Each structure stands twice: as structure tokens, then as C-alpha cells.
Image (cartoon, rainbow, N blue to C red; front, side, top):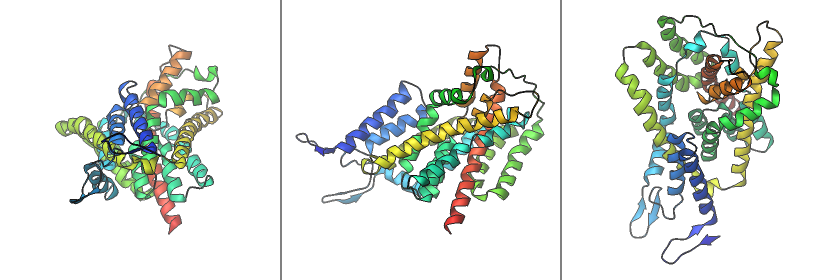
Length: 379
């Protein structure tokens, strides 16, 4: 179906749908302040790449021949050819993360691992619904609650659905304050949500903070080599932070590098949001599977905490398990807000932050493990 106005190029129904999708993303970014650095350029890019005869994608023009489009060039050069942008973004993310709350309570690593359950649930679900293993693995990584990891894995897996995966990953990250409370309340009681936790942090020395990113990179490199690019750049950014000798570069990584790459990433990913590739029934299915992945991430972390409480004397608030997803720092804020709603004197934010940064590490390790497992299986 096409709509044609006098003197105006024909617009298809699918392209109109993408204008609406782009408008919704822009609305979420501006009105709701949900991940504006990414959703705003992604939404605007979705409109750009779907304009008839758009100059931002390659096209053949009468009398001129093929002309290059800037968004398609960015996609083919910085993502399709090298996956450079998602990886470089991890330097900025690492520079912003303080691993102190995690290092003072190493047990929080367990919650970060448990909250990755949604990834493997979603991979299984996508496979059962008919997606091939490469696409199913890429769709499952939406459950990592980490946009750059989702983009990188889907690119390495050569998935046909990178646009839908990116939109799902970042949209659900932005909607964590809505999704997580509903999932948490499904599997907890009011009494459990009110459990009080004392915070007695251990002193974390500067030496420990410096050694941590180095040791983690080496261990992950041996366990899941495909994760090294992700974990290594994340940990390098954190090493810049903790070294204390690169303040100018630290500020550049935290502010300029992270923001610039995020903006360019949003525009670049929009190349995969062209109407003919995006407006399909399987795209809607991917969005639903991604939602299930986020919900089961949350439930997996909470249920793990409840099981742990069966064996320990000093109980943990099971909502800490929900903070183990990678959506930092939104998940920890959601958990603290819910704890305060049940008991306003209960401050569990630092526990939640510890689990949250553990989830950041666990998500990129999970991405590497999925890449390793799938590539080994397909050999």
C-alpha cells in the first residue's frame, strides 16, 4: 500500500509505521527522559532512513549512478566491518563504574550471575519458536540488559534482526522502572520486600581497585575468550578511573567519548530499522521475547536470593537479586525505591549497587559464553 501526494514521493504503509516508531522513541527520550542519548538519535534515524529516496542510505540516481549514504556508511564501517563502536563504548562505561560496593561485598557476584537467567530462557524460547540458533542467541542477549553487548553479539552472530534487537534492548532498559516492580511483586511478599539489611562495608584499598580490572580481564580471557573485547575494554575504562593518574582522559572517557559514541551508535543502528526489514511479524515476536528475557532476569535473581535465604542466618532482601541485571544504575534505584516503600528506614541501595555492577560484568561474560557456545556448536 502506498500513499502519494502531488509532487511528493510515494510513502508505503510500512514506512508510515516506522515514522510512528521513530516518533515514539523520540517521545520516550524527551518526555520520559528514558535513555535520551540513544533513543533520541535512534528515533530520528528511524525517520531518516525511511524517507523515500533518502540520501542517508546508498541509492542509485538517474544520470548520476550510485551515491553513498552517511548512515549506511557508518553502519558498514563501524559496526558491520569491525563492531568498533559498541566495543569502544565500554571504555566510557568502565570509566563511570565504581566497583567499590562490589569489592566490599564479593557475595554480590552471585546475584549478578543469577540475574542472567533470562538470557538462556530467551534463547531456548526463541529456538522453540522457530528462529535459527544464530538469531536465537542474538535475541536472547536482549536479556543481558546491556545495549552495547546486545548489538555486538548480534553483529558477531550475523543476525538478521540487529535493528529489532537494539530497539528492544535499549527500550526495555529504559523501561526498567516499569517492568521490574511488576516482576518483583509477582515472586515476593510484602514481608520479604521489607527485610532490613545492614551495610558494613569493608575497606577497599587502592591496590585492590587497580588489580581488580586486570585480574578480571585475565580470568575472563581464559574462561571465555570471546568476551575479552567486551570485558577488556570495560575493565580498561575502570583502570583509567582507579589509576588516579589520567584525570583528563578519565573525564574525556566519562563524558565526551561515552556520549559521542552513544549518539553515533543510535544513528548508525537506525540503518537496520528500514521498513522492509523492521515491519514484520517476527520483529513483534522478538520484542515479546525480549520482554520475557527482562522479566525472567528479574525473577531469576529474586528466586536465587530467596533460595539463599533458606541456608543463611542473616537474611537478604530478595529484591537485591533483581538488581543483578546489567541496567546500571536504574535497577539498583528501583530496588531501593521499593524497599523504602515498605520500610522507609531500610536503605539497601549500596547492596543493590554491588549486585548491579556485578551484573554489568556478568552480562558481558554471558555474551562471550553465548558466542563461544554457538560458534563451537555450528562448526
